[in-house]
Structure formats: C-alpha cells, structure tokens
Length: 135
Image 1 (tube, rainbow, N blue to C red):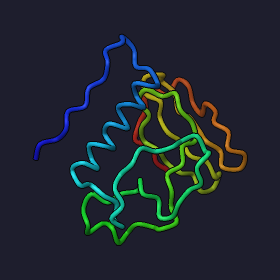
Image 2 (image 1 turned 30 degrees about the horizontal axis):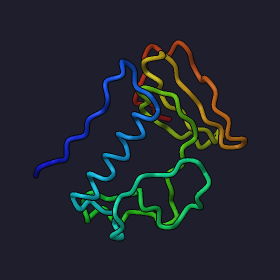
Image 3 (image 1 turned 90 degrees about the vertical axis):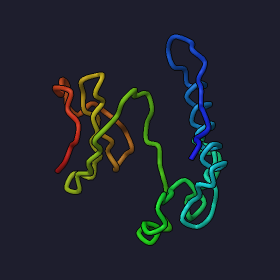
Image 4 (image 1 turned 45 degrees about the vertical axis):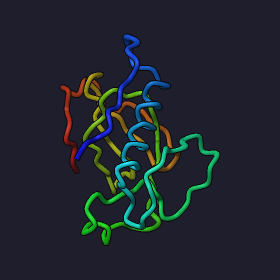
C-alpha cells in the first residue's frame, strides 16, 4: 500500500497552522486511501472551534478493522479539552474524583481535567517524566 507523503514546512518550530495543515493532510490522505468510519463515512478535517454542532455518530471515531466497529458507541464523540502539549500520553479516568489525568512528558508534569467545571490544572510537578497512568 502506498501512503501519501505528508510534508510540513520547515519553520524551525512547529506552528499551529502547520499542525493544522498536517492533520488536515493526514485526514485527506486517509480518505483518499478509502479509510472510513465504521458507518462508511470518510474521515474529514475536524472543526474544533465549537461553532459546528456535534453529529452522531461522530465520523472521526473510526475503527480501522471492521471487527471492532461493533464496539463503537454511537453517541460517543471526541472532545478536545485543552491544547498546548508537545507530547501528552497516558490518560486515565478517576471515577471517584471525576477527573482525567494525563502526562505532559517534556514538561515533566501531570495534568488534570476536572469534569465538574471543565478546568485544567497541574496535578503533579515534577512528575519524574511519568506516563502510562492508571487508577
């Protein structure tokens, strides 16, 4: 299988527009390869502005293997809770506290998103470059 080549302008440091172009290029490339969601919708560039209403099922939740399509929850959507991380990893949900924890590895910290009011704060710093969180 030949994958489309995706290139980014070399500007010294990644810019938001470059990332957006890369993500949109990836979505277009996947759609060109025929990658589609479990419901046959092609992968498209995501509008994260909040101006577009969420459609169910979310076309960006995809199963790359048809066998996994049956596990997809039709009312589940992708939600961006914050930005600004170079390498975020290891999300874990704390059901007792109703918050999400993940590692911001290059910045040596763990972050937390609190469901009650939707704010994000530093959970632990330094985190000893942790990842793979669990409760």
